[in-house]
Length: 115
Length: 113
Image 1 (spheres, chains in turn brown, orange):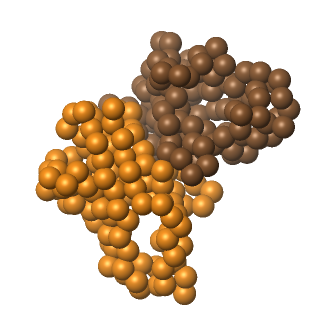
Image 2 (cartoon, chains in turn red, yellow):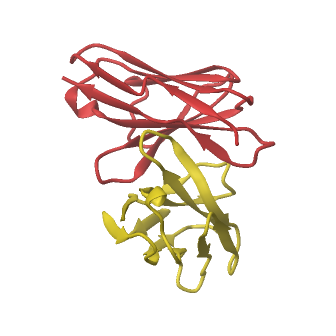
């Protein structure tokens, strides 16, 4: 199947700093990428959908100025958590799709810990 | 809105035991249903799917049947192996798997010798 690589897998940062998470489709061009967040013992919650070259569409309740999403190319999307706080600590997962594949493929996820 | 409810884990089984992980859903449209698996340290992988009522998805000995009348998509396997230890997520998508997915909370399966 298609491969999606997410980096880093784990990151610890101090409160007030920003963290960037990368999501790359390695062997296909992703027209759409999705960013999810998972709290312990809870579902993966969709944060936003991004289409290459256009602004991301955020789900209700997700702060777009805090979670900056960029999808500048067909193989790369980034999620930047700005001015991180301990409550932003979570597991973030991206997925990528293209029309020809018919399904979305997931990255390995990033465990963010804000101290 | 759309939602998925699956049984809480962890589920611990002995090798060769039968597995059932329950999953029920509510959806505003006619959803496609999925089971994803996440092995330790890896991303989610599609395990199986079904796109219409009475369809049975199957892969690697796992199967699940789309039951519209009971809004369920239970995951089953007749004989589990240690290598099946992972977290299993039930999910739905209205419009196909390439659209946004609504996930259940995930069920951790541990298979012991």
